[in-house]
Length: 323
Length: 294
Image (spheres, rainbow over the protein chains, first blue to last red):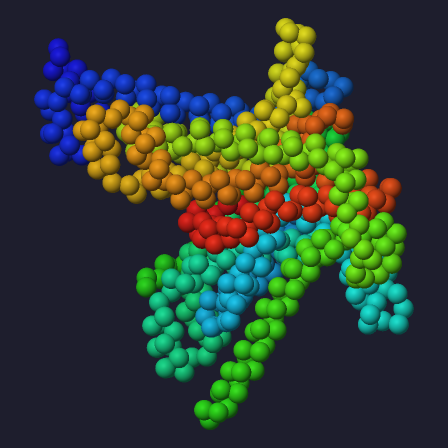
């Protein structure tokens, strides 16, 4: 009886075979009894917190998208896919989706091009003050989106903005471009988002570029390959895995960042010209209290972002290069 | 031939410096401008925005601190951030340790769940969390007469900690998994129990990872505003700094209180900037250590 309990318990504590053998005949094995409780007390709080505030709300997004619930009819009423059917006829939603896709495409391409080129320069060339530049470029990443939005509002202000008065230096008349007007608001948003994201990705690529062996570049220059060729033929292919992962994550994060920026900077205005998918969801679900409808938007974007990441992941698949 | 390439090299170098300097200026100038604007008098905002301040008008900070209630909001932000970090560490450290170093039933399932949590962004689930708390308050009201789940800094801190769990556990587990089991065995032979081994042997070794975690989560908790805005609904009640700042931005559009807006901006930025200057090396290194954060 004792031996049976003994072997069951020792198996639990054994991390390695050698240690197991050591334990046999050890009286301290008694401690194995506490093991289950130890694991329980360690893991339970995290699992409970995670379940209450992440798993259940996520399931609720999908469940509620099939119900009608609003401030006036607080009792849920099952409506099936009615919310989704309504979505595809909602021109405001379609516009917000278009804006989201525009942001994903343009912000991704611009940020990645700049981040890669700058990282390539900073990690390849012997630049004085290299660390200084790195520190500066990372600053936008530590600022709250609310702060960045307020800064860009000061830049874009029509009458006393930094940008317009800077442009006025080069023009005989006072420049009064409405940067947050209906026609330019998306461009302004893109600039702010790129400003925020470049540094982060640059630092990330610099780290992975540092692991590319110097000898490859040396032999490439002996063969007469220039900087640009080296960049495209050596650097990019060798850090491709990293680029690919960041790209996938970037798509998910752009959808979220677009929401944060729009909420703090434009509130979707003017006239919904800068509304993005998640800000429209928030507007419907929180401000308008059409919870079911809002959650249908949320569920759709959730699936959309995953599908898009999967597609990007598939399209960018290359054979991994060893070095 | 050789001279030509070196001349080209020089030109290229100059070009690079110009481009890098331009980008650095584009990042630094707007931030520096806010600091400058925070000491301007309100009337100065109607002139050239590039003009230097006429004097150091620190009155803005006093106004932001008291009239715009940024002082109160600062206190809430400090409480929420500190509390959320404390909860996160107390909950995530043991969980990550157990999940990465013990074999038990359900381990794989829970690890996968937490990994999946990396892909759930709070923006999607903030409204369901809000509704859950609303329902909870209704329920509490029917029993005790009052609800306390909304407008509660402790609940906000709990939500912050919970949403940061997947990333934190992912990062910590990655570190714990690399440690050899010899440490635990040695501690065990010396008669230390599981808890003692974990707290006295394993956690001190994870100090670099713990610091990275504190840094990243400090920044994200301090800067977060969507959850805070949604869960702190009382207009006269407490808010966190970024939410208060949003209120100031909106107030500025109607009442044109520029001075206190930029003073408020400085109040929000300053703690993160100071922290960044102190630990910038750790932060940029830690980022590559931890992989990605969306």
